[in-house]
Length: 305
Ligand SMILES: [Zn+2]
Image (cartoon, rainbow, N blue to C red; front, side):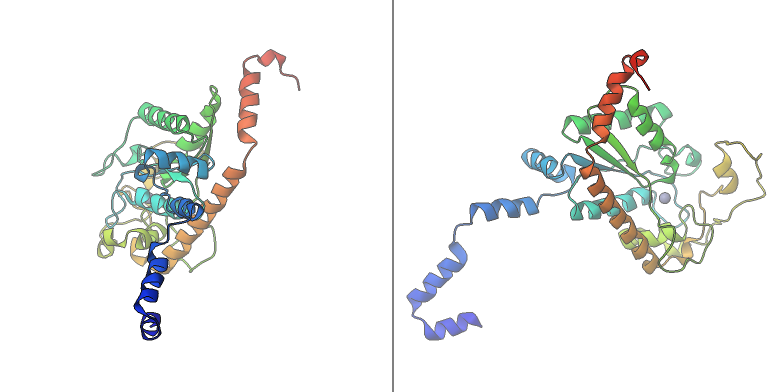
């Protein structure tokens, strides 16, 4: 509309001048660099080497390691459900609060699903060694704050153990673990009480992150009920407890999943993660304390109360 108005009232030379001003002005240096910065990918693997340097600077050394797994998820969800969900939440959080996100990582604890097709269960030593070398390499590249975002319930013992054993010997970086995926309350009312694996919550989240991979019509093909008759002794832990209760590697009922519940839970996950990233960026105590601790641990007899 503006163009036709100009055509009616201006000679050709003026139109040409206006077009030049509109389309051929050289970009202002500051504007160019800020728009390039705004486009900086959060995906480690999508950054060029020099953009990676900018990304580390912009993230203040905070790098995210979304941690998934490859395991059966009931009869209706894909093997990579935890990886797909945790990356969805992490990437969206990093878009809001910039941080560099490590590529697909799924080398965790899943011994209890080795009887199911498609499970990749690395040995205990391999899991710990690979994770240590991964965080070491991240730190060598400037990630002085490595935030592991756990997407898989089977890692819930592994990751605190891994973080704790960072005190074994000096590291010039801090490992943080964020291990919450589902809000305790609020949101649409849930229909099921047992909901530990591939059930209502996890299936709902997949309706948000990767609905194209779901087979909701198969969700009742197997039972996700608790097999209480497989009672084990009380007061002790045994690794077979999960198989005893959920031999189909399915806990709950995915058929009742809704997108509303998925959106509520996924938004909660993303919002929580944004807050955690901000907290980690602001943390200037952990590394100082670690260094103090490493130094003192060289000569414990000198430590005074
Ligand atoms: Zn899962």
